[in-house]
Length: 107
Image (cartoon, rainbow, N blue to C red; front, top):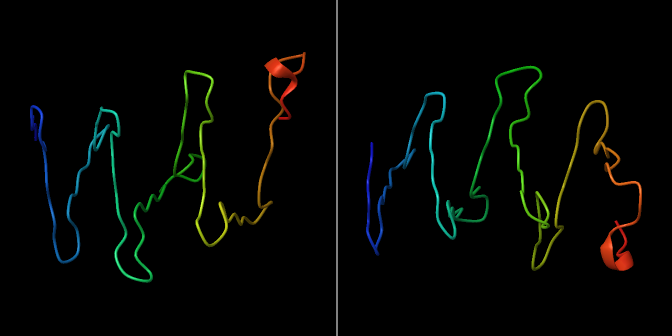
């Protein structure tokens, strides 16, 4: 499916169970100031659910080609992130820079 909204909305979808379903090498490809905006509804609504059916691939991968963070989480009333895992909750991998970050900012 291809949709071009010009200056408006390209695609709007809703459904009782699934609003948009896509599959393929790239199931959904989106670009824009906010490429994808999702809103969970109700007390237990989840805005985005990702599931990897591989035993080695990550369910979600984020990459920032600029100086910003790859992933940012925040909450107005709860936790910014909640992590759990059989091996560990979080795995931190050292950065490649040998000197401290510019402006001497903490990691």
